[in-house]
Image (cartoon, rainbow, N blue to C red; front, side):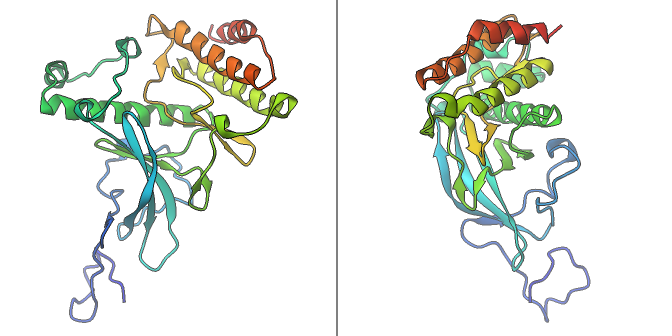
Length: 275
């Protein structure tokens, strides 16, 4: 019989304590401070029990700056939830370096950490990886609160961002770039992209790197991923440039698939919503 990890009444003579096995760990939820957990109310499907295990099921995607793993969080013997764990590598083990333009208007507050990042010390590399994880988690939270379709941000823990897994069972939803739709078949998805861009703009942000490769298609609904570089349009001098680039990127992709729209018209419409 499984023993709740924190049950003070249970006798170790009568019960066997479950311990994490290979590719498992105790759920990191109990140790995460409230400010590093996702927006309330927490969704009903999310497992928050202290006795839950996080079981690593495999890798979903390998990227230039981070890898994404499939995680099942569950209490042994009970139904759990499937999560995506995005784990940032430090810059010394990454082949991708973001332009400093993304960081305009956004700096590391701790001066010691900022100096370490500039010196590229081992501590600085760890800080940089954690910085991008916090950026992405914060961006996901802001987007979720603004009603933008993103994976629910579960928690951030060091260099790992845990979020809702978007897909069926253990199969990830395809990216927009992987679809075979053409022409008018894409009209609804184009409308969703414009609505997503407008949602970011009304919240005062640009995605900063939006393309058909970071938009997932799940049950006919687009979900935005990869948000660590989100740009504050007002604070960043290049904010409007990033917004314009996002629009041109997606409009160009749709045009190549036979559905044309005027990127400049979309840009003008969104800018009008900023003020």
